[in-house]
Length: 490
View 1: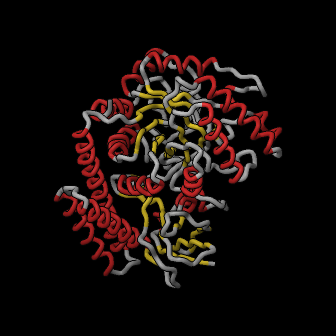
View 2: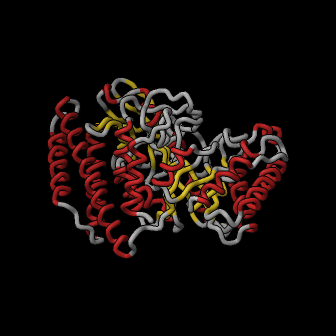
View 3: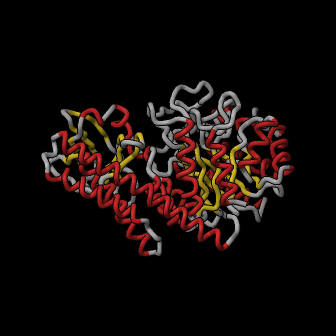
């Protein structure tokens, strides 16, 4: 049994933090870990004793809760001092990325170098005073704040320069730029504002809503959504055809929970019916979604992969030219730290890419700030590096986003995820869009961005994650998305 110990100020570690902290190896894959607090220490127990990296939400002045990472640390008997190690890890990450981008020709503003140097100065002071003292904690946390400042400045500079280069080769980017239309038709005002902000849309083909009883299909809403998109000249994606989520699968499918062959046959019939109905009108098929989600009809990981592969195979057989996607949620795979599973999402994606089933690209579903079932908040530089990590698979990426605009109860949210109090507002949602979305678009391997849920005034997965509020009014983030479209996209 491996054990890593960290001394931390008690007011920085909450029960919520203990739930979310985890360790990963050099490959970024989380280990299954047991985390607990005792006597001013954070203890992480696991079966391995290899060197690892701690990831933990931490309050950063001016940014709220940000998930920070230490450097790679060896296991040792004496504890580490957590604020100091978080400062060391963040400064090291920024310096490494700065050197890499400068070597590749990025013009880094002097302010970034100055901020990194200032962070190093505070870190050096924190390292030589008594680590248990309040002064050491303050110095280390100031070093963290400055390092996060530098990370934001560096990521912004990268996005601006890369977008300028890409725009010099083409007047506007041809990326897929859309929002999911949800389960009901848009009213006139919402439709008008949606078309102004987006050039694309996704029609959700939710098996539960379409095949309400076995063998009986109702396509009325999806037919009207498809025709509306075509009338507005929107590029159109559809799906996921199979989404591994209890709210997406028909209730009657529970009868086949222990009959995988029967379930496979029913899933195949639904996929064939949907593709036959809409082929020729769809620009992009999402064949399977949330393939890495746990606890769906007691399906094993292998069975979910087989269903996703079958959806790809059938869609390609019936529509030989339209690009095909499969989506994965929680692409950092934080959930692996608390449950035993065989395959990280990147490994599942790699298997599907290598299977020659016609898979064109991958969708990364990133629901920011929600726990459990979402992605922990991270700064833009870490966000950029994880997109680069997924790019190792060598296929186009699409990014699906949900970002909250409030942290109080949402009466129409169907998932019980929590949000850190005081972290989210209309302003922070808008700020997130303005800082992260241009960075995503700057990645040449990212071929599209999809906002996962458009409206808060109809039932939805994630609390306050829409671009229209409960009163049907557009949020500032929607105006920001429209501005990004005008600046960079066709």
